[in-house]
Amino acid sequence: MIDVAIPGFRRLELTDLVCDFNGTLASDGVLLSGIRDRVSRLAKRLQIHVISGDTFGTARSQLTELACEIVILPALEQAQAKQHFVDGLGRNGVVAVGNGRNDALMLAAAALGIGVCGDEGIAAEALQSCAIVVRNIHDALDLLLSEKRLIATLRG
Image 1 (spheres, rainbow, N blue to C red):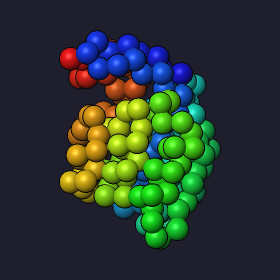
Image 2: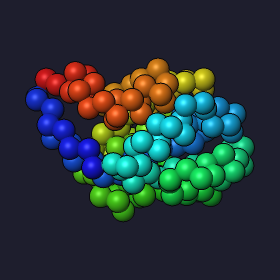
Image 3: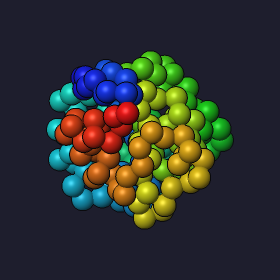
Image 4: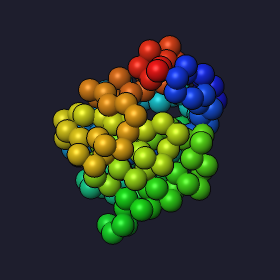
């Protein structure tokens, strides 16, 4: 669990990390370097879930041996499915990370939504739905690994 009180924002008691795959953890279907180590460290504190439309069909093979649940979504209604997934975990304990239009509802539903502006950019709908926007997934995961960064960014 990540338990951090943020003055002027709220207390976050996070139990689950829900991440998009393509555009967030991966570029063109290939897991970005440095992700395995960060996710492994976070898996000691959070349940990790990767939920994706899997555009390139590589999520399962790229995430082999990573301590995470992998959920591959059908082509239609992905945004609603991602939100439903977050709801099922319990919104108050979820940090969600994504960049796509189909991530917007998930980002808005989570206790903490982090938008990633990587190689694919970030969809306007996703941008409007998150509390924090970072340059890349490394920055997003590092925020969770170093809670004082969350405080510095979100305090009132």
